[in-house]
Length: 614
Image (cartoon, rainbow, N blue to C red; front, top):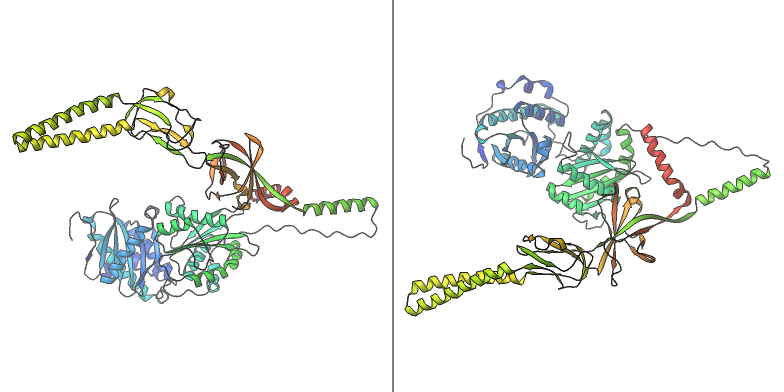
């Protein structure tokens, strides 16, 4: 085996493995499972424990393509990102093509190697991750070849393990439900259902998130992963895509769907580029009444045709949403039935008046009225320009303070240039001296001395030019018309400033943004086309009205409250709007029944109380 610092992929041809030397655990009949996936899971777990590996993947190759059939990676390896699995797939591809054991350095900093051993009879490849040095690979290569040969033998002897699940076309979902419901309720059922949906759609990754009554989703299952850490970056990115699907309450995809059936998403683009996928889709699973019960996130590594699979998945959407409570062993609380009132033949006058008042009250409860939401508003500059010092120096004089209105080209401050002037004068004298020496040497015919003097003159000339440029920038001017937001340097006069230091922040007033804080519990009822009216404390008699330009998709924490930010863009020709102005906004959501407006908050409070008690 070569021993040198250059880590490159190499192949090894070893002798035939001796099955008699394998441990009793790997040769026992416990691997003769009725299910191929269970057999592979048990075998990979034993192999990982035997060599203290960081994880293992079994790849299957069919029709000049290679796919991950079973993947068991530790949380530390999952944190390295999807590129790790791609590097393992590349190593497995080389091993299958060359029909030899291959190894490859997949992470140089952590000294992580991938060893891939092909299985001739099953046409698969066993790939294992090891944290070791290049000189210590020999015993692992021998051990893994023995394990790969034994796994190939198990897959050959087990009749039910001869069919590779990822490569055969998935049967109807109804055929999988019998097996799923034979499992214990809870996490195991969800994982098998998620795996079946992956096979049904032909996706390379399928993630399922359950949606709570408060419209918050949490990942419950990820294909080919027994358990996952919510804090790792890949899982947090998947959770981000699920949250956007719940927020927008529609199917999303990346790249853009040519038939306009799915809406596109920048978050899904980020997921696709991070996981190396060619297509990413999020599909909400909604019940018959439109309530979203779960969200599926699917990733395909190749740009294959997926429309038929997605149509099939959408057809199963309602069925799956109704089955989820059964899979998770949850039950819904049914409301008590109302008893029927017995009609009375003879009513008194008081009873008739009471009934009439009650009828009018009930009619009023169903009366549609405009529904408005109150929110806080604050003025922010649309853009801000930062004025920095281009050179080191001393602050001689500052001309403005925060809040002052300035025009483009107005002097904001001056830097002391006396030291630069002295240095420039000295260099100018040296420059004149070098030129004179050049002329004298040229006149005497001393070519060498003339050349040296010419180079000295050129060097001094460049230094003088740089100092002159520095003198030209001693005056700090405003780049735009606007107002000074920050830069109170009155007490800093005479202090040194460094190159790149921000001295002032100037914001133009021609266009301003008004940020409206939207409470998290009301964001689902507000759309970007909603009309917003704003009155500012400085102008109580003036009204600003406009639709949202955008609603930020990510919530922010302001005043210890989780809120979303809606942005209104206003022209400001009279400079009435100033940065920092506060006001009250009224958001017109639409029409709701009077009863809903009065009782929806107590009703939701009651539901939360019931959730904590039951």
